[in-house]
Image (tube, rainbow, N blue to C red; front, side):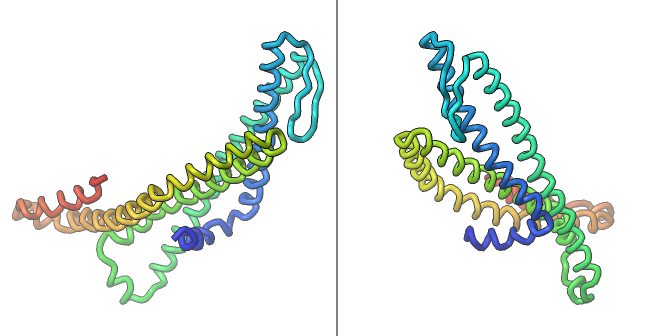
Length: 243
């Protein structure tokens, strides 16, 4: 199911290949900087507790020996750089999502307007509107989720590799804890996918119901809305509401 979902989402990244590569590069750099910052904080904290004036820190890419004030300045610089990288990592998925949304809306519009009349006539009222709005929005959100997930995986891998360089026992504990957490969350992820699929179908039915309300406005104005008519619409609302 995961591979199938990935194959469905891959086409939406084709128009953002450069941004995808940039996202991976920035994620690696951000992971290395974060690992160096954590190591620096630990060393400076230990030095301050012991009253030392100079320390030697292993910053993943190499050792650095300097006074505590200099180390604090380097730490502030690393923190600012990490914050800047985080802004870039937030902007790139949003930009990729917006591009995917625009591309998909154009493709759907062209497919509908250039399609045969038999296809257009078979569309129920509200279905095309739902596809052009709610479903494309969900797809755009999925692009953000996947891009953010790729960023998280790359950064985690970078931090894990840095942990092996800095401390083998800590890296082994971190790896074991991550594997246990991943296995524990898999059933929840499968259940979430099932609910998302059901909600997508229910939203389509709800959109159709809303469109039918608009089309039936003249009849309900003349004859009034019966209780069964109201109950049918309330049922659609309830289906979408159910957690």
